[in-house]
Length: 265
Image (cartoon, rainbow, N blue to C red):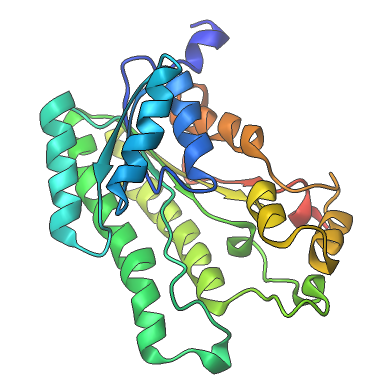
């Protein structure tokens, strides 16, 4: 197979959770541009449909759908709908994350913690469970979990300086758990020709810069990153297509760091 063909996703059906968000939108575009039919799913169905329309206007295939990761019935309904319409689910990208009640440890209540985990742990487990069953039936599939550098190293709190910003406990816990889930699933379902990998990106530039501009945190972050910048749209698009496609056919259980060298110190 020619190398250009290895990266093609033509004819592949893909679900992207949280596909309208910071990383979600470029991920959705990347998979569509590679030839996949992309189902963009989140609780904001109108936003999903709007991004899907934008993708279609660029000549690619996409549709928006409702998905509430806090509701197992909603998860099963989406998987059933996609399977009925397309007869298969080739690729699942788990990008959705709830940042609700993300706080410092001393401020976190049991309710705060459980609210976050209901989406980021239980919801993640349930959609993987539903999709992997379909992938087992069809004998193949690729799952890509979108993690974070916070799931590869502990947070460097000094990078925030005097800004008052911080890294919440829940986020680190969630993203380390996602890496563990990735490796467990890769080992459990490899015999079914199902690959499960994770991408752990660094800070997303457009979102951070729009929220904070230039401050002590952004200056410190770029200074401490060997490539001296944040992650941008094109930085995430290639790795997602790589892990979703046949170009990575012999890679599973891997956590790919897309961090400009942040974790290489």
